[in-house]
Length: 108
Image (cartoon, rainbow, N blue to C red; front, side, top):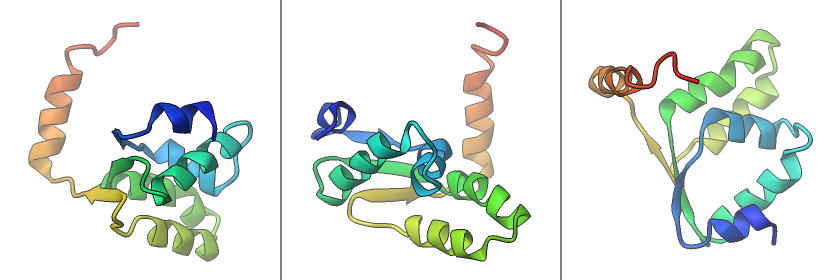
């Protein structure tokens, strides 16, 4: 068990699009560590939430490259599962998010 997977034990975490892209498209050097995270998720060692916006972000390059095989993998991955909630995002949430982000906008 990797250090990241061990650190996530018993928690609920948010998974952004880059986590799915790096895992499913086997992007080094992160793919092995992140694959271990998904093993922990499937084993219900911890749980995760992502958003429907993440699916949209993940599909851009597969659509551009006409990779229907990868489109299908992402669509299957983003189905709700006991260990992964896929939250819908509506305009109210996006507007609230923008208002929260303005606080740190432009800071480094």
